[in-house]
Length: 212
Image 1 (cartoon, helix red, strand yellow):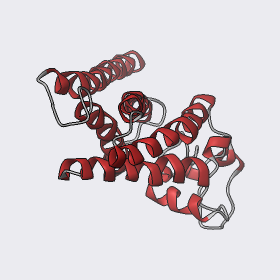
Image 2 (cartoon, one colour):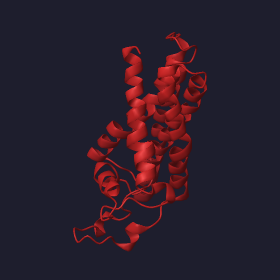
Image 3 (tube, one colour):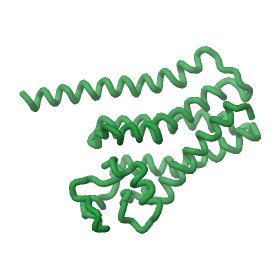
């Protein structure tokens, strides 16, 4: 494979092992279970410290009652919201299946590769939806927690689907046309930026209402 196909293969493998299999199957989030640092499940501990400690959508709801006693407060055992569970289940079944097809297809160039790549675009869009809620919703992560999520979550898990679609949009052989970066990079990231601007302005409006 050319070097850029290897880069894409590694990105997809990163998503497969690190998120869509590791997170959704080995921790129990696809069953609605919240990531708990006091769990006996070693994968819960790993994902807690890597990512979930600062994410109240999947991690602790109330960080003020967290301590080192080894006991989790009842509020932090609250089940995940239905929308989060649905995203986890989609990633655990549909997305994982697509990733396996894509990983194999990039070596064999089978006829299933291009359809799988186009469907995989929705994985990137799901991550954008999740990121919007994580950053601008109730979770409201900021600072190093946000930087960490961008590096290990949003950026690689959106780039992989979008770059794959751009790479295989017209043929198995590399043939990137002028419109492909616009459709597969500018538009989806533009929507995320647009959502962020609207959400920021809405927050500013709410602050004005409360202060008034």
